[in-house]
Amino acid sequence: MFSNTSTKEILRKVYLKERMAFSDEELEDYSKLIFENFKKGFEVSAGINISIFLPIKKFNEINTRYFIDFLWENKVNVFVPKIFNGEMISVKIEPSTELVKNSWGVLEPKTNDDFSDNYFDIVFTPLLYCDHNGNRIGYGKGFYDRFFKKINRDTLKIGLNIFTPNEEISDITAEDERLDYLLTPTETLSFFTGTSKFTK
Image (tube, rainbow, N blue to C red; front, side):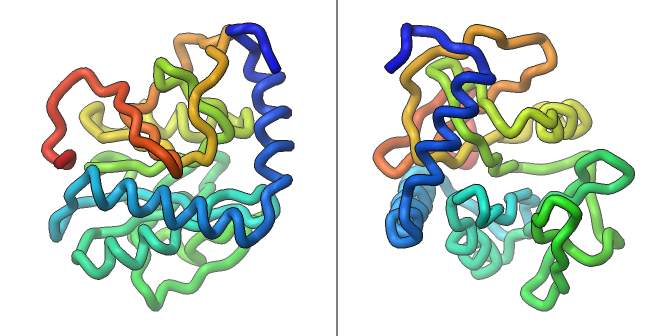
């Protein structure tokens, strides 16, 4: 379909179009497989801080509810993104937390009384595409790249995506933050150079 490298703009359009073609049933099946790969490869413990996105249904993002329920069952502190003053923060949620749609149609906590922008053990990251080097493509707003620069550098950045790497991204810049792992329905890819206390 492509040469070995393509730009973010091209890859963003192609993979969004491909993802939008999946049915609700296919998306649920892929979401469950990605979640099962996480459980097979990673361990969590009570009291750690994990940030995870709430899916944007109109963009066919994977269903992260399987992750969230599992993390709550294991007494993990669960945070989700919220746009505040034009930037992304991450707010702690409980099963009783009230969620509202923001101006982009994304669910987020109604209040930001309990937020953290400094320490996370794991951040689960949405994306449209990731290459073999862990470079990710989102929707082009840069929220996650800026967020990663504010938090602790030893945070594990785990991307959740349906597609495995194919082309390399040709226009990576110094502002782009690489992932440590990519979870897909068929595999877990590591771009991590150290030893993680969360992997099995």
